[in-house]
Image (tube, rainbow, N blue to C red):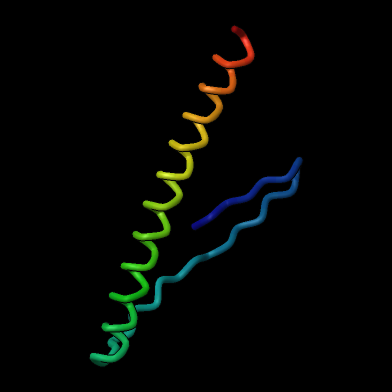
Length: 64
């Protein structure tokens, strides 16, 4: 159950999980999608670290 309250109004939403049994093609697609998501997450982490390094170097450069 997900309960959202806005002021005095309270709305309740019921959420359901649907489990489907897929064939081998669906599983292969899910594995490929999972790998893509992990690669994108790693690229995001690397990009964040590089941005922090650039910010640190710019801060050091401007304070000298």
